[in-house]
Length: 377
Image (tube, rainbow, N blue to C red; front, side, top):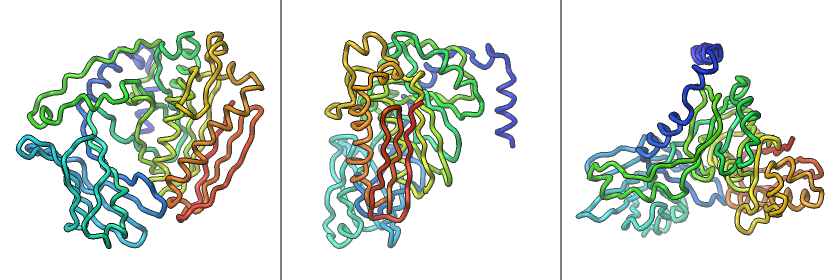
């Protein structure tokens, strides 16, 4: 009730008060995110049911970061203690399973696929060689997502919306309180790698290049969270029990919005939720680029994009529709489905757009019946 009253109060404020200075809010969001740090562990593949859940926040003490997790293989749950520390000036990691099985080594990259354990019985039981642990700097923390009607605006800047087509429809969504809106802000994809571990433990604040991406949004309510999301690569903590509806606007549909879609589904897979997830793509409020994800074929002719990069215009060409949608769907029904085949009993993808319709149900090795829908309008 308190949250509802606050939302109603904000909604009744004059627009100029609610909006304040969006560019200043963007700057603050970038600066706050640059100070973030956390450790995260997860399974890089889930061919059988396996789930890693944090049980503590990331803790920092002198020359050390640590965090605890529960590791569930469907039969039993054990503890994982993951830590990173400076040892005689050398960054090292240590993962301790069940208080006794240790995997350790030097930190060479920020995303660490854990080495094999010497105890192969425990190794095989929990497939610890598939556990990935990440050292995250300058990266937004996972966004909790419960049941509800969401609107996600992806990367509102003029580099993508160079024809200035999105301001009015996006601001209409942002000011419609039937949606829980959030805005993803663009930044460099490997920004956190610019943070020195040695400097971090020495207490030296990171000196990262300023992100300047001019946009045209003005009427942005203060209640709308701003999340720094490099190329749409945000993390989502799915808490929903029944249904999530996500309307997407912004750009680019064939990269950053694709990444946003992917990470929400990955969040669903790496959870216990059985909620239906519905993606709605407003083609009058989304732009796209010539080339999408490398090798996936979700591309558009350069001459078409030069005329209009609005998704509605690009997909009005019947000769493009089948191949584009088929390729867009292929990742979610192919690679992603195989990577998480242990996390569902069945995985249904229901995809509909003008000139294209397909429903696929993929059998898995898990316990849940999951459903994801894709709608273009």
